[in-house]
Length: 359
Image 1 (cartoon, rainbow, N blue to C red):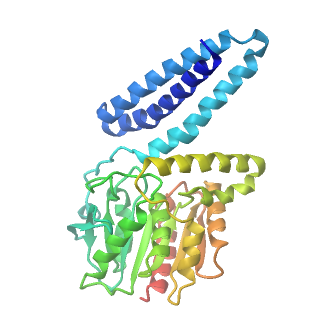
Image 2: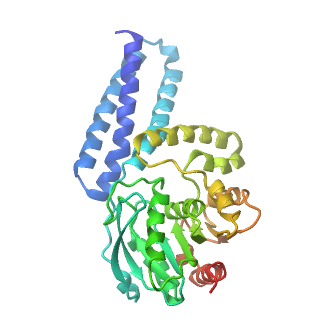
């Protein structure tokens, strides 16, 4: 067997292994041993067997004194395959998370079940709490969760008179479509949500904002850059969804530069695996939205226990001279601002929305 054949089998095995890792464990955790998990585990096992077989043949044809560097290279190749292709597959073919059974009624809110189309026609499911002050916000959850995860945030906002539209991102909960954990469908989904609010008789169309957690925060930032009707954005835990967003990793020197190079491959592969259009960088979206004649305002909420969030917020803010405020919640984990400092979260977020949406 030639070295080219051994190398080819190794590469093919690593590709199949990475795809399996991207599918199997996540689908198993979310859905049990269904089709997604079984397919992933079969690919994982088949790819691992092929890669190990090829690695054994390569070592067998290598002088023993070179085994250590060859093994090191094999481990690096495996890690890169998982980091790039495995992550791209996991983001492009995520499992569908289910609602947890709670509704706005469980936090004392009167609501309606609603459905509306995204701007590309995908049916999205949500709950709507009517506005009492003429303003309304779209509340957007993070990857791997549903509208149930932001019920406590909805209660705080509704208590201050805001209409609140909570909806499942596509491929999540009861919404149609296939999910994308990098949030690349966010502009289309958010545009449909803004259409819904703008048509409501209880909402003034010039007083619409977006509040998002993690992926939802990144989607909210992108939507503000694409939709002039968005006047305010609260984004908590937003860091990145395309390679250019990773500019904040410059703070880590060589290690950060290496990660950015690998991430470019990851996002490039994701672009080949999903039908979602790759969005513009977060910093560019903020720059566009804050330079309009009627600019949007942004509040970027970061977790004190997650240094990258502050670095990312600073990176995003550097693209604009005005209109962007940051708030770091000391002692908070990712998107845990409300849980960690409920009174401060309510004060900061509501005051920001009151000012931006003209209470």
